[in-house]
Image 1 (cartoon, rainbow, N blue to C red):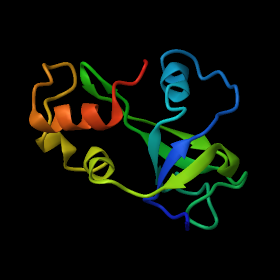
Image 2 (tube, rainbow, N blue to C red):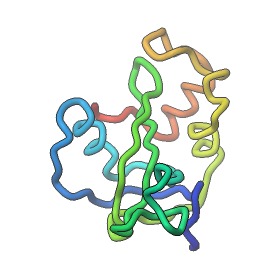
Image 3 (spheres, rainbow, N blue to C red):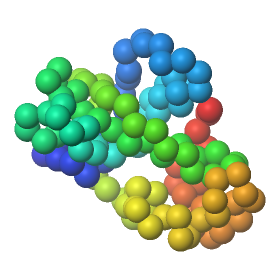
Length: 125
């Protein structure tokens, strides 16, 4: 499968790094979960998808009882596996998801949030 900005990937492993709490905990909780490849920060890439070290910038949207969080981090090609998109992946990583779930910290009782939890489960953060 080709890799491009917008591809969905499963995190297979991550190198041990220490970004400090809570970022490192969230990053480590992505192992085995789905992320989306996003554009690298401006000026960090020559090909528009990878930075100079060959890593991809990923967006991870962990689910918790409080709602949907979001972080981005980099991963090497050997640490990811491209997967086919599902409706739930498209929904979770949609820019409009916020119209279908409650703000973070509020009671998450929408059918959309319940559908996402059924598909992905809660992240261990």
